Length: 92
Length: 135
Image 1 (spheres, each protein chain N blue to C red):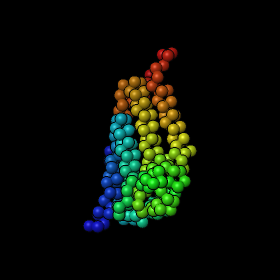
Image 2 (cartoon, rainbow over the protein chains, first blue to last red):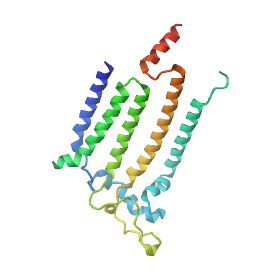
Image 3 (cartoon, chains in turn yellow, blue):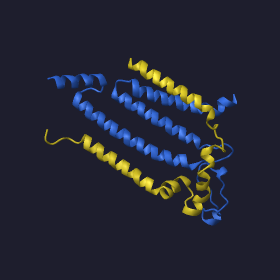
Image 4 (cartoon, rainbow over the protein chains, first blue to last red):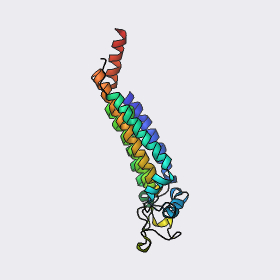
């Protein structure tokens, strides 16, 4: 029963997603929305503003530095969580 | 034919994603559910990376510097058409970190569950819990 229900949900979702693919930009389209709206600003100004040739590094550590700090926080909290889950209980 | 070549990458991600979704919903073993979740996240990452591709001679988003300017370029000479879109790469770097964190927590939880109940099958755990509350 659960297998059938899961299969049904999966097939409906897949049909909806495949139905929407003609609206998506084609493979490698340089005029797709993702490549025309925000990213040209970063590509053109990254070396001038941050003096970092690698644009991915410039965005990660300079433009989005706070985001990366939050990301290290995520890893830290996950590590703390693993330690709390896996450490041996003393009082048992 | 052109339509298939332009769009079949999306169908690959949809198939991968649906395998992950089906695994999360229909599988009884908790470890298999975690595998399904990881597949789902991987398909999303592949999808985002594919949006950064630009055909027509674009290369990796590392600015090719002028050797006379210590590897930097004259401002205004870099054009967006020369380099791949860097933003999906950055965001998926973040997503991979979150994925590893969730995977680690999930595996730690599975280890606790296995120590407590001696099994990872969902219905068996429900049975053991019912017996414990009855007694």
